[in-house]
Amino acid sequence: MDLLHLPREKEDVQIVVRLPQSLRTSPEDLLALRVRGANPDSALVPLRELVTLEKGLVDKSIYHKNLMPVTYVIGDVAGEVESPVYAIFKMNEALRALDTKQFGGSGAPLKIYNATQPFTEEEPAIKWDGEWHITIEVFRDLGSAFAAVLVLIFILMVGWFRSFLTPLVVMAAIPFSLVGILPAHGMLGAFFTATSMIGFMAGAGIVVRNSIILVDFIELRWPKGCHWTRRWWMRAPCASARCC
Image 1 (cartoon, rainbow, N blue to C red):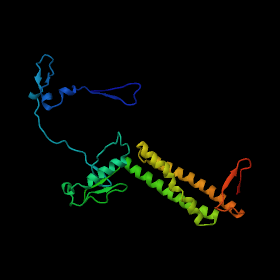
Image 2: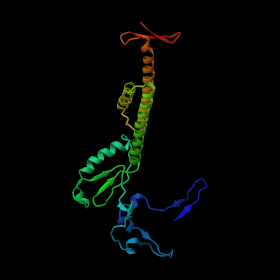
Image 3: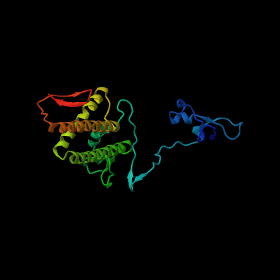
Image 4: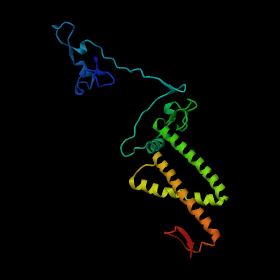
């Protein structure tokens, strides 16, 4: 009917007058309404005597993306399963079982796209977008950056230790950073997210640092006659190591 201007509101508030839900659940409820004409003294007339009810389809909006027709299906994940990864994996199993002939296809399995767009519209296809697309890009970028960092660490350690075997021994401890992550996720019922990936990378950096310190210490003491069959300990007052 009108707009309400409130000082504390950024946008105007629309004023809409409508019947309660119980009085507008069917067309018959609306046709039974009585209205009055322009003359205030005129009698009330049922709405069914003034209008003609016709059933039909409302025109739908036509959407395009990348010059191809597209239909958007929007959904949100809430409750016990908060991550879209697990919900999408379950839905993909049901989508692959669909018969594409019912949607104008040739009967081939439904093509499912995650990070790329469908190239043609000859066959029905589905593209997961929104938060799932962002999740894929995050994991892809984190994984690529982590792989590049591992290569750089290996090159630096090769130059420091002057050996190709020692860096491999140091980096062999990286998978052990998952020892604390995966059991904790399993016990708490948490899902592996991008934050978990960042924690794994941080843990990998810690174990690599500790391994470098340990290996460097061993290599410094090795020329002084210490052997693997002997026991090592650190003497606290002078913080030095000796063999016995």
